[in-house]
Length: 340
Image 1 (cartoon, rainbow, N blue to C red):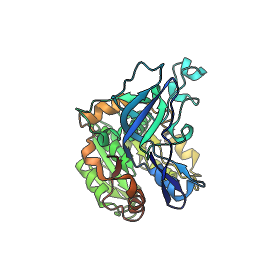
Image 2 (image 1 turned 180 degrees about the vertical axis):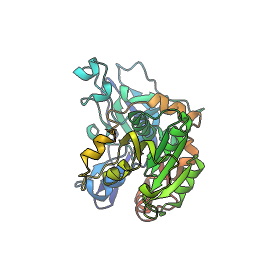
Image 3 (image 1 turned 135 degrees about the vertical axis):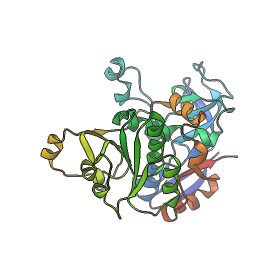
Image 4 (image 1 turned 90 degrees about the horizontal axis):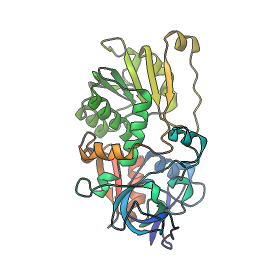
């Protein structure tokens, strides 16, 4: 079979490799679609020091099942949880599966990942969906929507909240749709620059009250009707976190998911944070949760996958498309590799 391997900086190889074998509790999945994640771009830019397979936003068809597998059958359409929980550790047994650190990971525990023709995973990681309701490329958005849901629930968005979403990548845009569906009063989309016109236009289409370009209007100078917002969801680099404290209302909650491996340190006035009664909450969607709910939201177009997918490409074009995502992303929201 064919599989893509990456090595930084932006080196790609399409190799012929053996189809993975499966154990008694595993399934072999024909990869039909794999969506491009921001972490994939980080792998290509700097994180892949040696050649490695990658890709974890996966939808496909089960073609073989291990002898112990009963929940999945050959021919089923499935999406793959990027990480599972183990069921056995103290956190799992105490009902906190979200805190399990011992489950399976597509990113760490498989030799061949999503940018390939076949993938072997534990059956537990495969979640069935209906091809009558979603195409494979649409279903590949389940994993990033699960990430968005994790931040959404971590931040605690409620009816009639005033909300700011900082960073208008695919996850940030999904947060706008989720906040509007929950009944937020106002949702302000905050983006550093106008570089990606498609994302700014998408924010407006999804119902953002306004789009704030922070390089032109610093967020603390924007005339919010109530002087600020109740809840803030950050999908940008951690360096923006202190700035958001200034637009949070008394008792505000700030959730964040942005990662910067090189510049992760921030500083802020703890007294101001304390006397404003703020909360800062970290979202980290490992293990991956909420897949059935994410599928339902995609099926019902609460988060419309057709709006998010702006480019599809074949496996052999991955280098060209990754370079476009890096150098010419003005019309890029979500790219999806589709296998024939």
